[in-house]
Length: 165
Image 1 (spheres, rainbow, N blue to C red):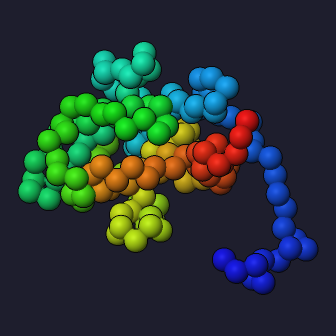
Image 2: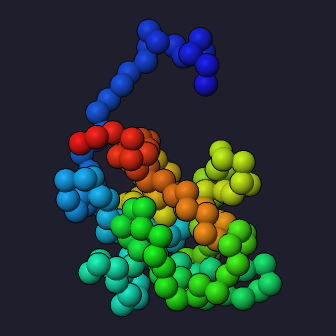
């Protein structure tokens, strides 16, 4: 957004809010671990299976491909970690339908990714209140590693990547 469109007299900048129980720092390099993530029905999708990454329970999603195949995918809960297991025989760039493995409901759409890929963000909520301002935003394109963590409307995963601690 061009600077002349910013109301600088009423602009307020806040520190990043205290973290929720759903996010944990692993070490001094600002590693974020998602310890709870709720689907559209309010079910916690962390620990749904016995799959772990570095000892942390995976975030599990039901994935459906355009050709009708579907299966469980277990994502690393460590932000920025590209590891996943389960139903992973999917061609890179495939647009997938992201579903809650418990209710089979699609994840809530947050909006488009602004990188020209055509991908869309979908919400894994950080609290059982299912507030879009507290979410892990995952994309619907397979192997499109562009997730974001939003907490109190602040994109903290981006902040952590661009600021030295």
